[in-house]
Amino acid sequence: MGSGLAVGDEVTVEVLRPAHGGHFVARHEGQVLFIRDVIPGERAVVRVAKLGPKDRFVNADLIEVVDPSPARVVAPCRFAGKCGGCDFQHVQVDEQRRIKMSVVRDQLQRLGHIDPDSLGLPIAAEAVDTSGLRWRTRMRLAVRRDGIAGLRRHGSHDLVAIDDCLIAHESLHIDELLSRTWPNADELTVAASPDTGERVVTTGSRQKSPLVFSAAGRQWQVSGGFWQSHYAAGETLASAVLDAAAVQPGSHVVDLYAGVGLFGGSLASAGPARIDVVEGDRSAADDAAVNLADIPEARVHATAVEKYLREHAAITPDVVVLDPPRRGGRRQVVEPIAAWRPRAVVYVACDPAALARDIAAFAERGYRLAGLRVFDLFPMTHHIECVALLSPGLSPAEG
Image 1 (tube, rainbow, N blue to C red):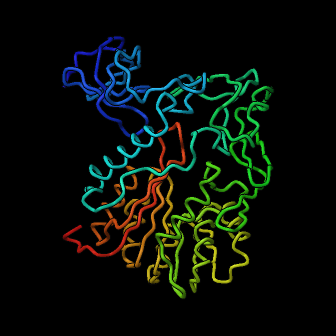
Image 2: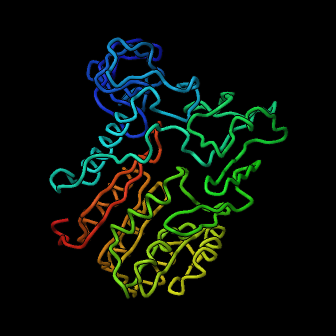
Image 3: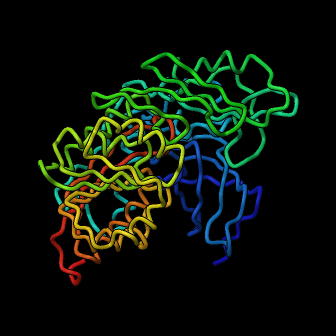
């Protein structure tokens, strides 16, 4: 369908709803536009920046808000809208959460083929902090040829030189890093533990020295394997997984994509007879072995999840924890898990679209969505974290 719109055209539109990925949807004469820096309900003048494939949609940049939303605020950061680190600094924090939850619901309905309301599931994102600022404990900075560090513009390799980042936790001392030059470096990775005050700065993408974090009543060594960036994420997600799993003494737990062992180790307090922790990244698996060394029931498998599933098709775990990368588990992971017929699958997801697709795949194999909690662990950005409980109870025909 031809839109009649060309790059550079300016039109006035009403913003209709959020889209997955930090954009918002509007229409002009039947043509879909994706726009950033707006809020549903606003009228805005926008300029067409890019045509989508076969004119199915266009990307447009905000020129002026004609009728602002009551939820619009002055961005606390003067670099908002310039660097690509934040999506929603122009939106009240509470409204950010409603926007994100709207996206979760939309993905569940369109891709998961379920209506959370019909299941009686909660429809509100849970706040983890109040201000939405100073939460991030790990950041990657780009470095220009002149040694200046900063963040890239949204959808661009261009670097924006900044002197602070308001979502960076105080323990990163980000202003000190930005005040220096970094000759012969292409990027910086900085990570810090608010629990110990230690900080590691690496001229590259891989952290070289371990940090120690506290969560679920234990200490966790992280040498470069995955750890959530929000300072409260470890405690928040471990508690949610523990509640959803409802592990019984003597049961068998399998923790897939286990990282440094946070969820498997946290579930040990419930008294399972066996915990298999599976992680394909060698650094993370080595950390998991250290972190779980005092738990005799825990076994760490330093292998790819898909390989573990092939080689352990005959086991019958009671509970499976699944925390896949952003792409989700997909059928090659969902199908063998469902074949085990666990009593519960606790799915930790950073991408609602991937979660919804995997929920649909589980439904085809007799698993229903029995619980859902949504946490705003990435304030000012479009990202959201979900913890879903999947339980057997559907026939394949119902799925």
